Image (cartoon, one colour):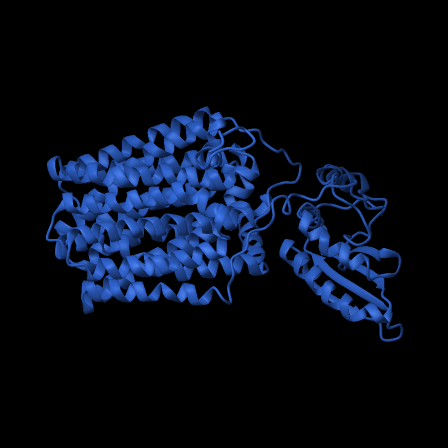
Amino acid sequence: MPAASADNPTHFQRWRRDTLVPFEHRAFALFWWASLASAFGSMIQTVGASWLMATIAPSVDMVALVQTAAALPFFFLSLIAGALADTRDRRRLMLVSQWLTLAASVALAVVAFTGGVTPSLLLALTFLIGCGAALFAPAWQASIGDLVPREQIPPAVMANAVGFNMARSLGPAIGGVIVAVLGAAVAFVINAVSYLGMIATLLWWRPARVRSELPPEPLGTAIAAGVRYVSLSPHLLAILLRCALYTIPIAAAPALMPIVARDLLGGGAPTFGILLGAFGIGAMLGALASATLRQRFRADALLRVLAAMACVALIAIGQSRWAALTVLAHVLAGSTWTLGFANFNIAVQLSSPRWVTGRMLATYQTVAFAGVALGSWCWGLVAHAQGLREALTLAGLSALVSLIAARWLPVSVAPLGSLDPRAGAALNPPSAAIHSASGPIVVTIEYRVPAESAAEFVAVANELGRLRRRDGARAWSVSQDIDAPEVWVERFEHPTWLDYLRWRTRPTQSDQLVRARLAKLVVGEHGTVRRLVARPTGAEPLGASSGPEREATAARPLERAVERDLHTDLTA
């Protein structure tokens, strides 16, 4: 066997390089250790909360609601958190979320020590802890691109998954012992202390800020922009729908795990800890194998295999009569859980431009955790009504729906670099000074298209229209001149001049390919562009003698903010 070298590395050397490369960046390494400590605390808290609920309200559906209470905040708050992550200081947002989570964890520990905890209060404080986590997650995930280069995002995501699942594999076993010996209140105290490392790291971190003279979007506008972007991105819609179909069945494994430990295995808190540990070990093994799997399989093929594995794992848990088989099935379930979520996460990150990454991750997390919450609740109800084994078996069969849907909803990842911002020449400034709030801004582009290219032009123009609407244009249309059929007019609007300038910053390298296709179909490769501003009754005409200096002063910094935009007739 030839010796390994830099040009001919062994399989292990390639795996180590692909897996550990993010740790070459100090900031990422510090965040990884801080998140590991926090994950240990969360796993210990999960054991305490689930087992405490099983003792004070020993019904299947109430125990499953612990998972629902932890997941629901991601459904309610993720879009808000994603918009804030894209438009505000991510570091400050993460600090606020960590202080909130710390306060809720301390409150839970206090009520547990005083004996005042009730099922409703336990669910409420679990929900509040989940709110802090929901605010933190989009900003943290979007910040990975600030900690490592874009090509290292997949191994960075997987490194985080390894850390989390290392805690999942060991934390529950430790948590089970702590709950059995010292009680749930001590588990809650440990969770509260675990947040201090992340808070300290955030206080230390001083990321380079990309300063823009454009003011941040208002929260409502930013949320609407995120919803619009994903609704007009077929590849992202496919990822999200596949994620939902995958998440709802696999949620049965962690949601019903305490009841499996209690009713199917006849155990207590230590048994529950062993099952959680097995689930975590499987998750960690799946994360460690991710680099190799991603090299050998496309994202879509890997997710199909995981859907089949989830089916096998859930049915095995439900039908097993042996403790060893149940433990092994939880190892398999943990592997499919982590590989599935991590690959959906990577697909979303690599298919989103930087200006909207936080909102796309938030949308993904909304779908994922809504699936966890819905699945936990539904399988809890099925277990209560039909039996635990039947619920797990039905969940396993439901996992095959994701496998079947893959034929119509393929998951694809954008090529590296295709979503980088498109840079170019300076913005062509308006001839008359215009205030940032002036509008609506109407853009028209007149093309001359040979008759033999008209059919293809319509198809490409509609694709370009989707991109324009996705990035913020409104009321888009393309029309043909009745009296001169070779003349076509594209028209779209923006509410204000400021919205138009924001839209100018959003095109990517891949969008330029569509524009290039259109250029080949029109006479002269360009269209005639007009930028119009509506002037309602009583409004001053542009260039009027009164007040031009005020409007010019307001416009200049906004124009400078987009000075790297490419100005061509095709892009308005």
